[in-house]
Image: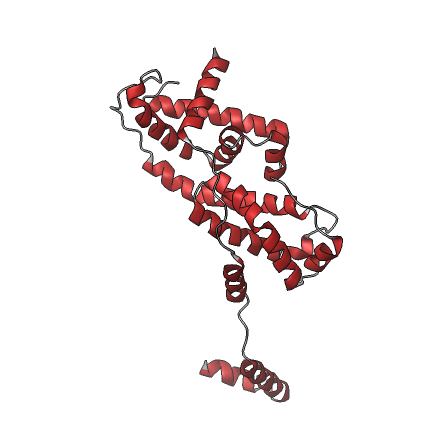
Length: 183
Length: 72
């Protein structure tokens, strides 16, 4: 995600609560924030709502913003938190829905006839992962974002991102096994 | 062996989820403005006048406080 630099005066004005400066930043960054959020939550409608929520939090926190820092990176960090909050609230629901049927026949990936079925089971298992693991794995493995970019957005180290991805894969394998898929 | 399994799992994940490539199709600023207005409800000027009169009344006659509370 390219993050354009902002004129220092605009950032100063925003930090002082100027609504016009906020509007200028909103118009410039709404697309970037939306694209980042949709990578995590994967739903266009929800991503629009969460973009608004992100900018609402940005607006509320204007006094805490340091104009010497990058506005884009700050916005992406807040957007990540908003997306994670959303995943956490939906996760318990998804988790409840992902009741593992005991009589699912075991399938292997070499069978092309069950490919769609395997994909659906993989989606179910992946969406039932804890929010933090799911977000890290989505950004790293599906969206193929660089680890340092993910680390900055999540506010953790690159090593911690790798650990989350590793744990996500381990847990996903376990859940897939329960669903009768053994990659 | 485990690395090989990891690779298969990554591949399966890539096959199960398409990368999100959707762009924002409309300007969200009007919605943002509505949200800002919702969260910052404007107090009508008449309410401020009423509040000021009440404050003056309480200042001049503190005995009015229990009377008001009784009627609430």
